[in-house]
Image (cartoon, rainbow, N blue to C red):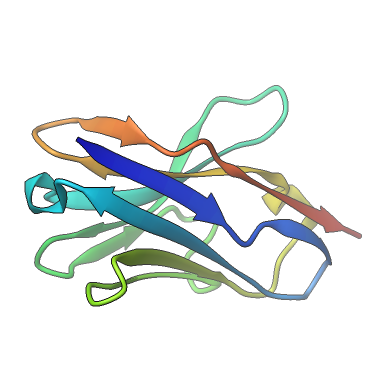
Length: 116
């Protein structure tokens, strides 16, 4: 099994930065990709950034150029550096892992609120 625990959320003002962390434990060798999703009130959960085992990354257009996904294998931690935050970035942010063809492991989320 794989366990994911997010941290780093909080309340910030527009234009500020936050770094989210996702601690990974368990059978990590089974993971072939990881990502960050977010869900704003009244909206569906959306993928905003992902990183594969070979280090390739992808980003949603809404965060491209402002957010950076990275991983520290020694610390078994996935990060999401979020810069130039906007009120529309307010959401619950979830860490997720893919072990086969689909995402099948989720963290419980960390809340980010960006005030204008």
